[in-house]
Image (tube, rainbow, N blue to C red):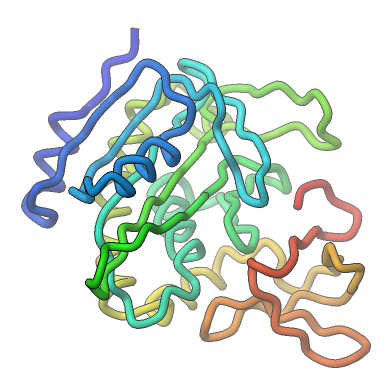
Length: 256
């Protein structure tokens, strides 16, 4: 049975985030879906919701995320945010997670953590309106592989955290990432993506790689812009790609 550090995480975070709570559920359809339902019903208190198992986990562009008890860490952090510009938020989240976990972890634009060219974790960010307020309720969902994952239907098997930290379980990983993630979101709210651009570049898995976009465009990835857009040098010039437009895949590698 997993022993989650709910009280320890709460004690670390609540001084910086008044009203913060931590919940651990044995099972839920999706931690993001649950917090979005609560937000739409008017509950926008800051919360970290952990699920030992997700029955309908979601990734970017509607992809599923399979999770089971012990094999992965799945959680969503919900809190009110009012940044001047939301651009680059998923990249900032990725920077925080990677820095908290291991120097070898790279970031694949716009929302994946990679280890040696294989997907280790994914990020899904959603927001709900807070009425007339300039704030929105941000839900930051994270799915992190802890142990070996099934590779059925995948060209490349997923990576898992115990490759880097043998013996580390989901509760230990949660304890490592929770407070830094809250701090990163508060930094993003105050300073935007500018505070994370250089740190993202240091872990950019696509830098100088040949890539192909889902609209058929091919080119060379040249880092990210001030707004977090992927810069791709194509025969037609430099293309600024936002995550809402297309997905991107390194040529000759799996993943999207």
